[in-house]
Image (cartoon, rainbow, N blue to C red; front, side, top):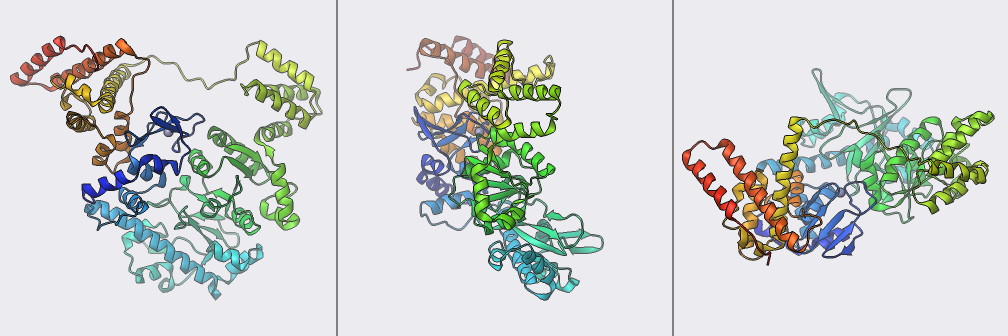
Length: 591
Ligand SMILES: [Zn+2]
């Protein structure tokens, strides 16, 4: 424990989970819980729940869960201490001196030192840009049409090639940073010849997180060096797949949509032209994690990728991720220009705004890509194209939606609507199904069967703990039968011991139990499951039988597990005694 338990508990209790999560996720009440779209995985129907009576969140889709502290850790990518401090501040509590263990404190300390290093490095590059060694960098940026104001706003700088004693390395050493810290910053190359600055002869772009802290750098080479763009490596504070360039500004834009573009320069020139709602993924393909972040701020994205082949392919790859996240997608056409920068320089910001208004729905964009690939002057190929359009339209299971798209597509691509509708109708009549990815069929192997049995055993344990925590009075019925040792997983056993102690006193507080097993997000998710696993389709007298069955299963598995390792006579005798007690055990009512 970093702080004493009472302090952490007070922070937890004073931060109502519904209050906190509602600040991040739109929730709707359903019975005793609230549901919304999960902020941690892609989904279209809500399976993310917050239950105020348990003070817990749990996602039935991705099985992440925990109390309010776990939520903030996961959502903000905070360490445990950062999350507790954040929540304490949220309710105006004084944060006492941190009493964390040395390893935890060291991890927090390193993060803090790295953020300082990046801040100082940003200033170092910035000063270089405005001195004679950075002249060519400054000229390059001005040549690209960036104003001094924009250069300042994005903290752009220059990494010159400097003699050793004036290098970034020498500067940071003088500022008191250790080699271990500098090594972790990924701003240097360490090898047998010594230490070298990682970036040189490059215009530097500080990469900021959503909280306006520099967490990494990107650099564009001057002249024809390779690679043209270079990012610093991932570190404990920089994960490429959860970072979007420009988001620290874009998140505050109130346009209702975000512009997703390809690189730093696109983002910067768009911001300069007044489109401060633009962001870009960083040197890594746009992926699911990026969508999760985008969805926090918007439900509509306009793809602003280069109009050349590579840019259009990148757009095509990004569409399925965004679609899966339930984000509305439109695609901006910048022709005859290649990128936003070129477009705005030639036609101005107003024309760009016009293009945003006219940006095509991504479905039409995909059809357009298909049309370009086909040679429509050849009648056979034209028929082929129209058939693939029909196939694509079949993807809409909703008839009204499909009709609307059919009309729009036919209008846009001058296809006869009557014949398109006939083609679709005949495909539907022939029972055409949208192909799904087929999984290879295999027979369960022995280890798979064992795995399934283990799953079933663990599931019964989860169901039992959820049951007891929601209705502590049930504990009296199993008190003589079940002990924490019957739980085969070590974590489950620890949680069971806590649940049983609290149940005896009449009330179980899952979120409080969670606090005892803090730190590891993985553990938090597993423990959250223990409080959120219910049997489906059981009611009335069925429910009593179901409860009996669950209890039996837990006890039998517990005893079998114990028998596997039992060697002493007394243990074997105890197992036999417990078996006969289980055989006699019965539950008449759950009241
Ligand atoms: Zn989820």
